[in-house]
Length: 421
Length: 134
Image (tube, rainbow over all chains, first blue to last red; front, side):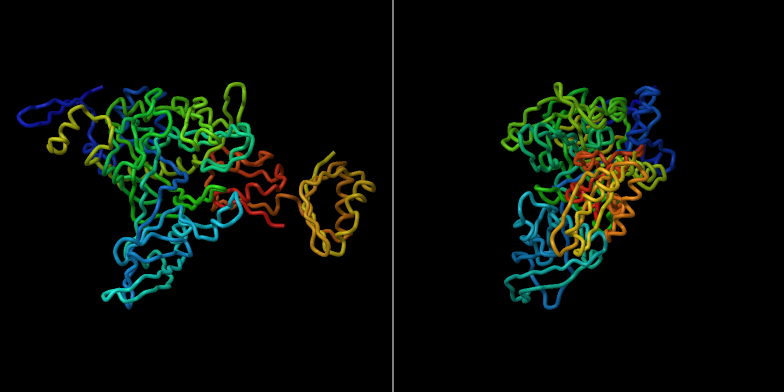
């Protein structure tokens, strides 16, 4: 393998940096349509066949994908001017009877995926949810009209005190999809040790460990392909809900202080906050999900490209499902009371097989994350990058706890030296 | 020997007749009621699995038809809306009779032959992809 030694200048010092490629170089190749792109699934085979060294040399980008419910989703939008004008900020707003948050300026509204109309909350438990914030978001994306009802107090400059009007997504001045948290790097496997059925966000869990549920795309999961967050940071361009979007911050509950096995965190770890133009999204990759007994969530399809800058990234992107492990957590007693203690560790290979073995018990497993959608997303992203229609975003700042990319990079960033040339 | 799962619909006029008894006695067909909702003066619905010789099952089906029971094979009315299904596989974990599975492309496929119309998937599919009409 031919290593390229580059030099960056920090102050009066010249620091040699050993690396194979930079994102800048890969982008140049993408523009020339010469970049070699593989999906994370294909990368597994490539690494097995040719080894990590050759993979690091040959492959420029690995594309990932995931599709599953993430309640930490929402939209904000700006309604067009009305006559007379109305100040929604400080008033009360509903969309198809689903309460939205209007505590910004006159025409800005935020709607969370898990918002519920009152009638839904009053139904007998376990509630079989039929509508909520995510349903409104999906309706808008599908081009349907949504009824906005607002009451407010009226001011001299915004005299109207109520508004009742139908809007389509195209009518809004701006509409933005925002995920305070998405793409959990790994996640719990849920089981129910109690004697009765429980209804959780991980699904309906049968008594006496009658089933287990999990929610990760495993080998395709974006952040598991860059476990040390060497290439993913603020400013990374991603595929989200059918269009291009960006990582704008670390996600809420982001942490890197998680036990690792084979270099991959065991359980929930890093997360990212994502943003994109709602008007460009597609219902193929954005769906309301109704979770019996729990609530309403929004399934969002996300794909993050991983530039293969060195061997460690090639190795991580080339790992298989049997190298990633998740903790089995009891959701009947331990999880609700914050005593998450792993009953056992299981690999995604085992989870995907349809059943896992815990002690002597064989338990059927099921997934919340759609593997076929994840594969589809990784292929779309591969196609876009190969065709030169998607350039990689070079992060402007790392996520908290991220490993430095080339030793000197973080120093360069801190010193404000800028991009390595 | 053959098995056949049928959705039977009884009009209010024949709800009170002992049709299943006749079916078993006269045609030597055993039946397993998987689901039933019958009330007086209303339409009745029953999902049964008939077990017996193929010849006898066919004769029994004719008898039901003549008696005014409309019926169709179970599964014909159970639909997986492929546009709504995202192939997550939650139904695989819920279905008591393993009627769902992944195909080679990881798409969820529904085998109506295994379905007993418990409606668990219809109620609990997060994406509302399963519908049941009878």
